[in-house]
Length: 113
Length: 110
Image 1 (tube, each protein chain N blue to C red):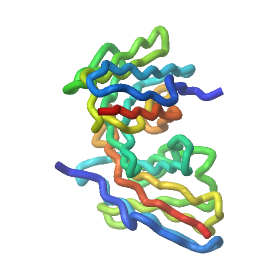
Image 2 (cartoon, helix red, strand yellow):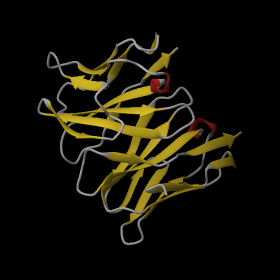
Image 3 (cartoon, chains in turn brown, cyan):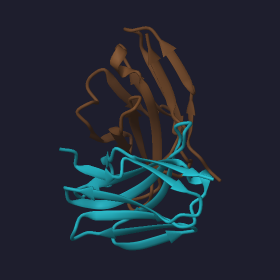
């Protein structure tokens, strides 16, 4: 069964460093998402991406964040200058069409020290 | 106030019991999702619905659009059902922005 994959599973970085989280969505999907979940809190929407551009973003998704689909298969989330409060689990998801459910990746745990 | 609320927050059940988890929301929605988050953190989509009822195995999800309420039922619960169950909604007409509830932590004891 096709699945969304994410790498790395765990990333440790120092405050102020740039990180890139990688996702490979399901191959025929058109819509891509990033979510985050701070430990012990609920999942929060960050951004959605369709047709090579951001379709929606939340208040959390400020200028330090960016997304890209560099090669038609990967979907990346870049955090330019990490802060301690960026420590969280980051989930990628994809869906195939307008009325289809989202498929989630296993998540990347980001720890900022 | 949270736009998506769930009850109960925590639930412990004996194996075999019938379980109900409730979700209420305060915004207009285009769809509602029930998700399962395993102890390791992974998220699995269980249902996406915008009206009526859906059934998959021992799981049943219902939604009442007028009352802005949905329920997830688990029949003949099993310890492997132990997980956090999350209700989430697509707000307004968007199929993109999803607002998540706080989750219900279910523990099924043998």
